[in-house]
Image 1: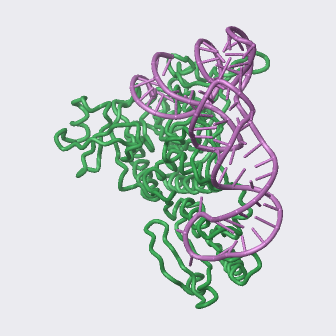
Image 2: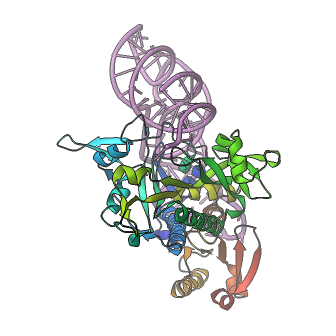
Length: 414
RNA sequence: CGGGCCGGAGUAUGCCGGUAGUACAUCUGCUUUGGGAGCAGACAGACCGAGUUCAAUUCUCGGCGGCCCGACCA
């Protein structure tokens, strides 16, 4: 993409009042725009990165048998009344609204109820199980206090996977598969070494659930890590003696850290299938409740976590896997001169070979181009300058570590 | 939801109960081009409402909005 065609502009300063590092950098670099507290738009560069993250999650979900759907945001209260979760005192993050005829509606904050209701039409026999259904869908949560930039927002895309199994044993088996898929995801987006499977309270569904917590000072949660076991405990279960027996963690070895919850996996059991009438006939012809699990990841929060963890004083730093472009091609020529002709040709070559390249073809000062390039955080920068004419070489700079090498055109395209 | 701070050109800020100043950005012109260039000129601003006052951007109250701390996070 030609940068002259990119409508967003990088800015020197972050807006007043935006304190979170992730939002400061993403706003300055033109990846996102704040509409209001806890509500952010994704602009072209930000959307590309978000889509890269979503793509990685999708691959991992498909690899463990996930089938993708897209359920609605508008929610029918009748379904939620069956599980008791329409009540504002039970779920306090509802956004509710009205139909023209006065009927009440909700904006979905999660999708256990509608999906369980939907699956009653498709699951009737043990032969129909297991099923694994997931989506990337806009959730609405009326948080009392939005904070931390894109980490806790009132409207956000969530990947939510729901598993429908015959019984607790087959559920447990799949639950562990999801855990591995999650670990793959966090590894692939570049935060694997700082992300811990963490025991947390399970709510009313099961004794414990698991969170994936990424160690980071910007995090809202406090966890206790057993480094050798690569496991952790959320502070909320720290004083629960049973968790140590369950997890095999010993209290003495724990290290306290701040962390960001980047994912969670829950055992739901039959709570929702009982409430919504989701059952199947087993081999003996007996009606049996479907055993459910739910598994969430917030792609935007994951994006914010990557920013918090990997960016530096110059700006964003993306791993190749989630960068909006692989290469930032920066021309130091002026439109029409020899340098920019070489840059144009190189750009066309990259486009032809399918390389994702952002081409800074704008007429502006060198310093400004480099500073903006650093801010955008694209993994590799290729500079077309006087060397391109003098020696036919191009400077290639790694954003992450600043390493610079000179390469010939043929080496770049190889 | 409790507490605190804040609200002015596109962005960031200084001063101020009496003509809203500056920097950056933007536009025009000339020069400049390997780390946010220079000169000249131009465009552009007080969240809303009430009160006090001869006079309110400034003081007071209320609303709305933003950020932070805490609580909450099914």
